[in-house]
Length: 344
Image: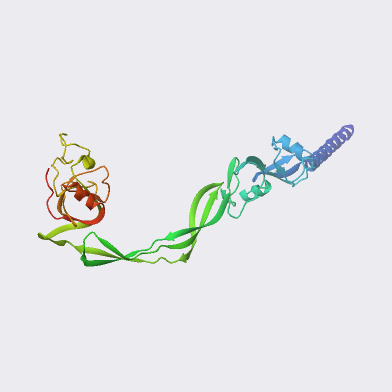
């Protein structure tokens, strides 16, 4: 009987120990579950699920080595007590360089678009200004935003309007000659120009409107086509006629600056000796060696030049100084004959 009583006591102790153990386990489990918090941290859009025994937001961030920069933003305070199921959102600041005509600034922002960071920096954008990248572009870290100041200015100026000449062919007029029947008159218009400046520099000009102030008046000219001429020696052919200013010269010192004892006395630029029918011209107008018919003088050869003979001027040789003086200066028609050039 004594042995039986001891066995019953031992069994009761075992059962009691088991009950106590179960209670301890349950209590520990309850305490663990009460102290543990399951939270979610969204860091720049990336979600992190965390189980922690820490008490505050600051504590859990330190535990997980999550640094918060001076310009970063959080959805709740660092001193906020942690609760199971809490969600924490972190917005990371981006470094943006904003350049304008007059300044270059760096700004740290948690906003999302170029438009918003410009507002945050209090940079006003004009209706014509250009922003690169566009206002709707999503910000990236270390992004550069360029603001180009665009200005448009209107200006007006008066511009002449060219007239045109109606050309009428005349059979009785020598080829190369023209008669002005009616003189044309230029018109005038007012032109409005838009000039575009970017950061103070001109980049384009565009005519935006034109207003006619005075219409041009067209002219009328007669143009000769005749290529034959009746002379004392009969009919001659020519290629064109030129209106020229004619003078006369002789072989004297007063005309040529040489005395008879000069070896070059009476010798033309082309090497020919002067004689009636030899004339001086500007070779740029009439090449030397060209045969001519000069109104009131007759057939001539372009064989000499002169310091004062430039452009549409011609100097006619006469043997007598009195004839030179009598001739003076007068307008003449000079016909370029249709003959082979003289070979000097």
